[in-house]
Amino acid sequence: MATKVTMEALSPTMEEGRLVKWNKNEGDQVAAGDVLAEVETDKAVMDLVARGDGVLRKRLANEGDSSPVGTLLAVIATPDENIEAIIGSAAGAAAAPAGQPAPAAQASQSAGSAPQTPAAKKESSGGSSIPQSAAESQGESSTPMQQRGGPQAGAPPSPPGRPAPPRPPSQPAAPRGNGAAHPGAPAAGGRQRTSPLARRLASEKGIQLGAIRGSGPGGRIVKRDIENAKATGGAGRSAAAERLAAEGDFKDIALTQIRKTIARRLSESNGPVPTFFLTAEFDATRAAEMRTQLAEMGDQYKASFNDIVIKAVALALAEHPEVNAHWLNDKIRQFNRIHVAMAVAIEDGLITPVLFDADRLTLWEISEKARDLAKRARERKLMPEEYTGATFTVSNLGMFGIDQFTAIINPPEVGIIAIGGVEERPVVIDGQLEVRQRMRVTMSCDHRAVDGATGAKFLQTVRRYIENPLSLVI
Image (tube, rainbow, N blue to C red; front, side, top):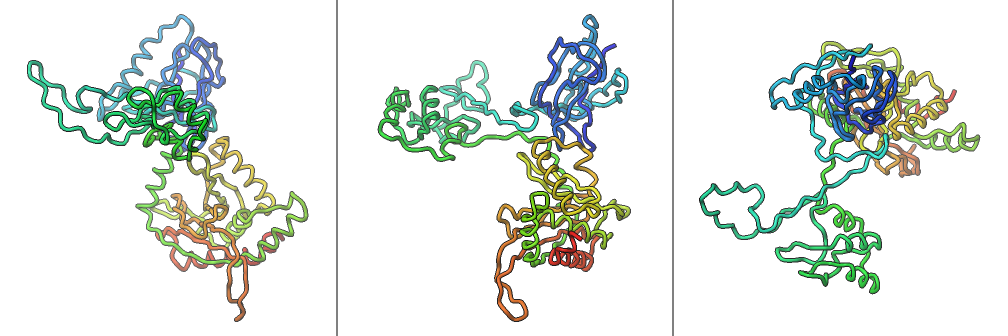
């Protein structure tokens, strides 16, 4: 009996996935549990496994395609089994007109598969690139043809038997992207033309085409112009000039699943959540001294400022359960366990791996786990259970030279702390001017659950731990 391979919900919040790579080709023998493909979810790249035995008879999705959960991606069957009805039902669902519900997906016929329903309309890949690996992807630009001598783009054709309307005066070409424009000497109408060989040679030799006057027909830049430019020390490329030569005036970048999720989640937070902000400046001198002394004891005792802040926040949350909470519309859920998420920047977005029971971890355990989670987050190798379930979040941009910023709350959490950089500043202590290590911290609070005084008291506790860092290691 045929087995449907559908886009499965590989993470708790996944609504659609992007097929990164097929690991099996049509005609390959597969067994239940074999990895058929790699799928990019809203947080990571996960394996899509076969739910039945047989031959991979048909692949219905291409690498790079995004599909809603429940969409049919492939069919596994015996070599002689008729699968036309299954393929036809999938094609009908994909072709359903906008605004009309698509036919419900049939239940997967393989053991252990749950019935799923495809969305009414499969999302177009929109020119998205095919990733080179599960952890990274590279955009691929298309080059639209330039119309010459024909009707203007978007103009309706003339009715049969009627003369074509007069063409309006020529207008400057609109900026074009995705490789549409190629630098070089301007031709008629302001279009710059360059031969493909000249473009390739210029790219290899780092020569800026915009600084070269073409000697070919109509001012076209040809091979000899590139060679002459090299001989006379042609102008060097800037990064912007290289992008202009390769991509045109602009390029469109298809949204990844993680970027779509970030946009949706932050929209849910920034509008409905009534947020206020509390900013305080902490003295980090003792924390900096402790870090230096710990590092001198050996690599196993090293700890970053981020590790120190996470530990301080975890201990403060234990004293302020009203901040270690979720807003659930009809109730506030205060947690007795403390799970601190840390924001990690990855290539195409942001992910928040979680340090579970952070208040019970030593500073060095936090340091070790944080490094491991951050590394695997950037490699897109985290499992869903490693980035869900947080009760509070810490976001640190201090390593980028940011003094102070405000972070957006990740619902249903009721707060988030934003950490700025640690730097020397002149301050007055007991009437004396001193230079101290200072750090600015801003807390974003959901006013539905956290009042101003509540947030302020929580920050006071965080301050106490950071300014007396020995309390973090004893």
